[in-house]
Image 1 (tube, rainbow, N blue to C red):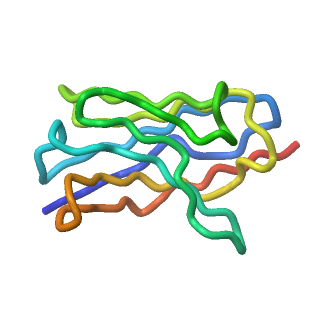
Image 2: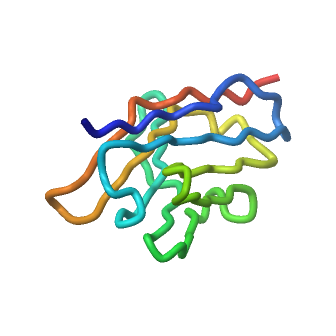
Length: 116
């Protein structure tokens, strides 16, 4: 069955770094665009970064210059490197895989808390 398993979240001080990982299984990972979304308490889920099957990555303006998305098709894994973290980055981060409207999957999420 399809699985997206996020890891790497935790508590970090402002200015710190974290690297999130999302391990995929049960589908042809290389054919899917992979994304990271986040949802803070009381807010809507928002797109943070996306990387296409062709390895073209983009990030939201709110994290541009601080976050980087990458993928390793040999390991069926997508990463989100987060640097210079701010309290506003506190959220549950979700991994998403999409090929088309009929083929979209979500992970369970990993909590990131930025606080001193």
